[in-house]
Length: 309
Image (cartoon, rainbow, N blue to C red; front, side):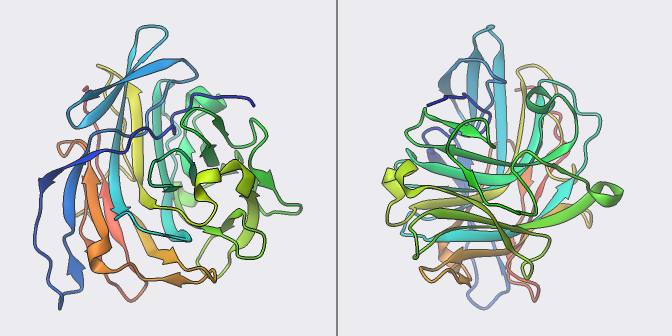
């Protein structure tokens, strides 16, 4: 099997409490347990790396001796049995992003031990694609080391006549658009399927990760994350996350229609106590409160970046 050490290798998802704000059962806005993420997705930019824990971020050393820093904001589920997840996420253009920088947003589904993982979302990754365009992407990992993005190796199986293929470019009109993704385990064939659309009512199959690829997710997943990520070399100024605006701004990036998927493939609202806000560097990126809105469960996230560590 081809092995790719990718930005979206998620290693040992360990969290520690930062602070907790009580939520009201009668309010439509919930401030969930907010946590610092100690180990997050990082990029080797196609280099080998070693991972070391450094407080609230993950530091990786490439084979060229350059430290690579990743940051993350979003919501993670409590550990339980899940058949999938749904969300509508804002998508942005960053035409001037440089090599050594990455901006992304995604849904991440894994088993409790994080050995099996599937991810889908959008990313701007000049080092990977050779351009600064926004790309639809997928990623999988079977045992914390074997896996790859898009269609770079055998793994994800695209369906015929799909409206989009992993790796395709997205063209945000006026610099911004939105996409809806659904990752779920099918009762019919047991595979983990990915559906794509531009709203929650227009989802169509893109393809699937075979059940034989994800032996620790044969029955269900154990953890889900919705959120945004950035990556940059150490001592290089980190890029914006989301839209580059803080969660309190009217133009901040959002995840909407945030749902779990049940065994029949239908979406359902996450219980208020099942989600935990996570963020790695509040001076540069933040996660907004989780809101119950008419248009669906949602939260804002992101920030201007500017971190060098």
